[in-house]
Length: 120
Image (cartoon, rainbow, N blue to C red):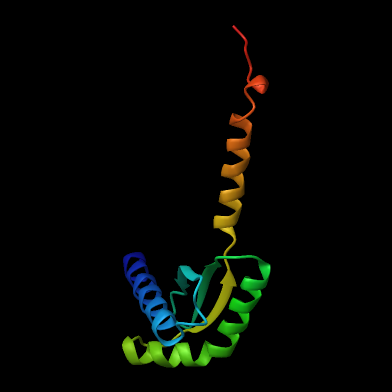
C-alpha cells in the first residue's frame, strides 16, 4: 500500500506542477511545488510550495492558490483518474529558507578563524 501512495503522490505532484506552470504561467513565476501528500483514502491532499522572494510573494502565492483551487482540481481530474479527486490544501513550505539561513550562519562562522578552538 505504501508503494502505491508514493506513486500517487508523485503523479499528483508532477501533474499539478505542470498545470500550474502551463495554465497560470504569469501568476506562478517563482512558485515551486515541493511536496504533495495525498491521504490514503484519496479524499484530501496537502500541497507544499515554496516561493522565490519575500513574505509578500508568499502572500501572493497563497492568494493565487485560493483563487485557482477549483480550477486546478478540475484540470487535474481531466489528466488523471483516481477513485476520488482529493480536496487540496496549500501550505507555504519554509524549509528551504530555514536551510539557507543555517548554511549562511555556518559560513559566517568559518569566516572568523580566531574563534576556532586551538586545543592540543
